[in-house]
Length: 284
Image 1: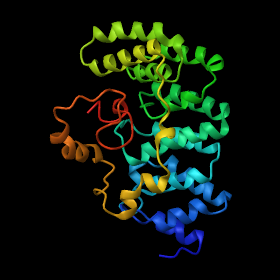
Image 2: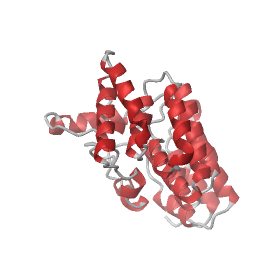
Image 3: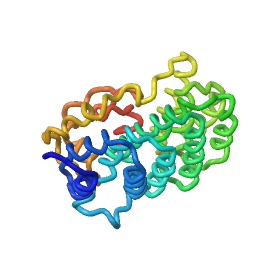
Image 4: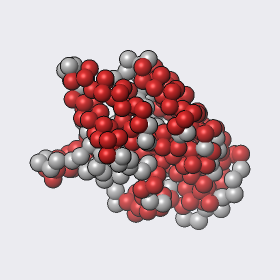
C-alpha cells in the first residue's frame, strides 16, 4: 500500500490492530520531523498501558509509534515512557516495553545527562509506587558516576521494594563499583527471606560483574535496526501478538526445548526477545 500523507499513516497505525502497518510506520519514521508527529508519539506512548481505552483496533498503536519515535527523538519522550511504566504493575516482557527499553537508551545517547537525570527520577518514583523499573535500568550505562552515584545509593537505602535488587544489579552492570557493599547487605537479607531466590541469583551475578570487571553493554548496542528486529511482524509470519498473554504463549512454545537447559541470568533469553534472561522470563 502506498502512503501519501501523514493523516493516512496516522489512521493506519491507530486502527491496524495486531497487524503491523509497516508502510505507515516507515512513512512516518522517515518523514521530516514535525510537532504533529512528536505529539502523536508522546500521547500514544503515555497511554500505552491505558487498558480502559485500548481496543482491538488500537491495541498496538503505542508500539508502532514507539518505532516511529526512533527517528524523531525528543526529550519529552522520557516523561512519556515513565508515565507508561507508572501506569502498570505488569513486569512481563512484551514488544511495547521492549521498544521503550530501546528508546530509553537512544534518548540517553542523544540527550546525555538531561535524559539520564529524568530517568533516575522516574526509577525512584516507580520503586516508590511499587511499579517495575526493570526496563529502565540500562539508562544507567549513560550516567555520570561521580554525579549520580550518591543519589542512586540513597534510593537503594530508602526503598522497601524488593525490586531494588534489579537497580543494584543494573548499577553493577553499568560499572558503579561502589554499590558492592549494599549488594552484599541485600544479599544477606534476601537469603534469609523465603520467596526471593530470583533476587539472590541476580545479586550474586552483580557481585561477579564487579569482581571480574566484566560489564556487559546496554541492550541498545546489541539490538538490530528496527526493520530487522521486527522482520517477523513485517512478514506477517510471527505468532499472533496478544500483549496480555504473550509470555504465556512464549512459555508454551519453548517449554519442551529448554526444560533441561541451564540459562545464565545475563544470557540472552531463550524466548528470542534479545533481553537478558533476568529481565525477561526468569521471574516466570
